[in-house]
Image 1 (cartoon, each protein chain N blue to C red):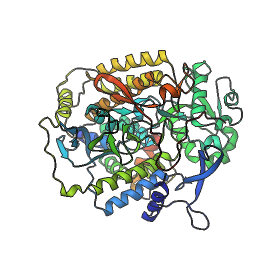
Image 2: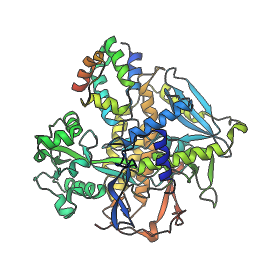
Image 3: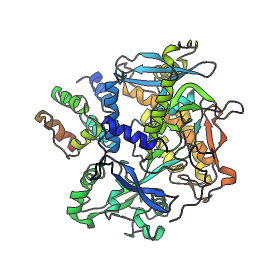
Length: 79
Length: 499
């Protein structure tokens, strides 16, 4: 992933809820440009969710119906 | 007050899933400070959609916007207002994130619903985007900010992260402890103890920390203990709290207490408006003169329904009642039949100068460093308890930080989705809000609502029952009278709160 792509994700990770901001910022900080194409696509799908639904997934209150999101969710939950 | 029940019914008709009673009517729950006859007895007044009322509200209104085919400019950031020589607002200058292009969005009506500036404090429950962008834009355009000294603290934010731990934890039996393991709220509020109101608990915690009874190596927080409730209660009734403690405090609250600090939650002040959401600013003798073309609603606005401190649930009520009132008022103006006023020759100059400085600066301090210095200063000098010495030196330090804000530099000069540039532009808004807050607080030598001064512990109505107005130009203050003629009820004088 190049710097422009990372900047686009950084912009999308600016949310309306502090809990999500903190986890997403930690994740981007740790992974940065090393994210795979699959991770980027999965993160884009997660970022389409409303804040409360995203936080439910990040905090483990709910599980994603889409199995393809699981690997990314696991790393986000560890972030 | 007259409009609130109507708005709730309207939202219900839009499909908002309010909790219901068995007979199908909307359920209303008790909430801190909700009383009848000025504190005589508690009443059940709060309408809610489970524990996600704000979320349900947002979703419901978003669907209405889809139906109305509203066009959203999602990947844009507003930078500055366009104001002509007559003082009328003619739109905003905005930056498109994808291209980096700057454009003027010309408008017959511009409405700010830009939220508060909770990120001026180090401990904040607010999301990163709450940088007071509307307040900064208004201040740079010469519009005063009102009552900015009044900020509500929530007592239990996770130390270091700010994330809110709901009052429900103390409702379920959680207690606050100092470094001696003492349940100190028994001393400050013998009856209500840990369930005293937000400001009382926040001040008590602050006093414990200031007097050296804080916990941890820096003695900078207190502990919220809930392990005695047992795993069953915690897992069943407070599951999200356990997740929050694990993720943001790195403790398992089933076994260990959570480190907490009083945390900024809500800004009572803002851009002064009237009941139609129209922005007002003094002009000659008229202190209610309308700024034509500009409206503000919600946390960024100060229509002053919250006075000097806000009751729980009233933030949502504020935005739905006055958001609706402003919308109705704008529609009634018949703007479609009116031509745009010509743009002034200098339209967009302020915003372009800000961007040009950032593009041109090759050396300078980093934006996060200056932002952190500002947040630390505001927390230390303008926090829960204030006094003259702290505030005077706070004003001086914030003014020094303003000089540093003008000399920041960003390494990334790219045009596409440049969040470093966005954060630098946001810092311009944070500094305006911080100046307004600390200067207004320094001058209000009394305690009222959310402003608690240890050197002036009492309310001083003869000298200070007035609204503060802060102007960026000259960093000066003026005051305006409090409206003592409510629309629909008899006026009542302020009185001391007792428990």
